[in-house]
Length: 387
Image (cartoon, rainbow, N blue to C red; front, side, top):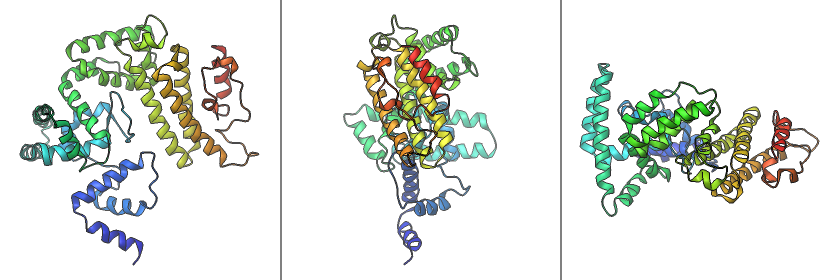
């Protein structure tokens, strides 16, 4: 029997729900670190069944899209299995919706879907939003009730595991509760932000800090998501850390960690982690120019950390940064190693730089491949000039 026929036979043995869940999982795994040899034919078969529009990513139905609408500004694509402060993985939504509609509130969910589809058909967007908001409140109260029991969290984890293998789904569910509880306050905060923050100078930092203080009084659990909204407005995303560094009495990591918005440091590291995944994908697809741009942002973020946080290496932030840079350097080294020594590479370095002048603040691996990045030589001169 041909391989394609065997795949088709295997898939037909599965229920439609199982096939749909399998497709969601395979697409989630595509964005993670693991290789998936031999899955191309399976993906093609499943996408032909469930992606009638030819898309290669899961698309939520209209009822669930209305339900998850308040989350849209803080959703992030991909499915890295690290905690992503203030962000919710888009890939978790399908599993969460299946759990809500099949296990948590089966009858209410069915009624909600019927009503929302009627309103969508008549293009009554305003009433549809109200119906969605009412159902959101019911879901929040129901989940809170389950979580109040001794084994509630374990119950939810077990149920979610029937729809996804992602370890992030439960955490994303709890984040969803925070966003839905603070949806009105977050919407008000979002409307008060500038459309784009070209320069995050002291005046802008003061204005944003004032808005954050007001939100914190109204709904403290919404703060990480508010910070994520600010980050989307910044021309240079790493500048979000200025909310913490400007509030600290000194540049020491300990003082910065004690500020109200110290979480911005972790959020900047989250972005570096996401960029690492993007870099890996770019290199796999031989998109070297894209990889160069990704590296430039990574190194700019690293530089910002080094000059704005003293004793960084002694902090958990510093350890995480070193681990990320080591993983990134390994990717770059593997890419450069594919070419003979006498063939130049845009990500390669012709000579290793001495790091003594950097007072040991940067690791050897962090500089691998940096010279040939566009503007890399000027970057290193700037960095050395700061020490």
